Image (cartoon, rainbow, N blue to C red; front, side):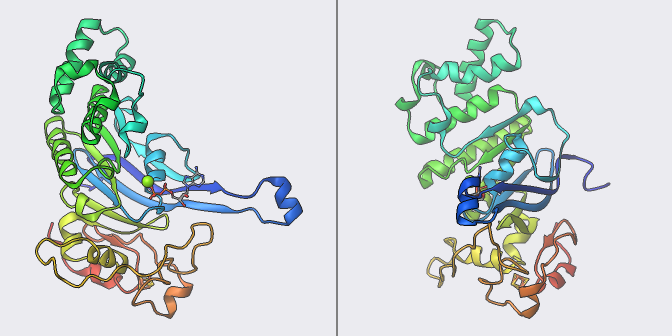
Length: 326
Ligand SMILES: Nc1ncnc2c1ncn2[C@@H]1O[C@H](COP(=O)(O)OP(=O)(O)O)[C@@H](O)[C@H]1O
Ligand code: SF4
Ligand SMILES: [Mg+2]
């Protein structure tokens, strides 16, 4: 059976550029060039129905732009997005639930809105019963429907966002750093809720985080992004057991390790370069501890795929030949 046969989302050579030039008059007077920022610079991935693909990488690497391209908030500058699900049943959960919940609406109205949009003819009593049910599904009380968003804690507000997303009867959820604003213990509760809902409702997630330890327990497949590209993609267990790209290895070294908390952890060296003028060759070479001459002039390709694994690194390519555990 082809790996793509059960795909709900296929992303091919996706690009998004932003014009970040100074205004025209300034450019003329100060002789400034047109400047293009490559936020997403040719990425490919496939998500299977009912699975979770995580996008991981440092701030600014293009994760949110991918989320906005997939949900249609941005148009691509190049490449293709093929969504095989129902567009009306694609929902998004954001990092900051407070900013995304209307502060003047009661929670009941917030949660009812997607339902009314999806099925405008639904009688009020059915909508009302569904709101109560959704509040309970996400671990809140039906009585909470009369309250306003500011009356809840951060974790509770993210539960409200989840209830609102579920009201649209989604099959595909794009979750952009859904727990990054929460305390660690609250984070775990919300992640567990999301996992439970995924199982019960057969949801598919595109799950975005800057934190590998968060996606470890959520994702079936992890794609590591650097400067608008996917540098490595592997099933989760493989990525943790055998990280191929030097950048993935650095990311793994900087996350807390429960089994060896006292292990020496060196902070990742260097700044992320600007996506307006990325380094030539492998864009990671200025930070790479094993960079060699070829890396400075030639860009490693990312197309070779072995056992659902891919890496864009000259030094790591050969390691792909080994068998995968999956
Ligand atoms: N609307 C925009 N206009 C110009 N630049 C943008 C815009 N949106 C994002 N960017 C830039 O694109 C890059 C990727 O941003 P983003 O996708 O938000 O990254 P992440 O979510 O990984 O932090 C950043 O350099 C950011 O400044
Ligand atoms: S291609 Fe070269 S610079 Fe880039 S990650 Fe691999 S070894 Fe490092
Ligand atoms: Mg972001």
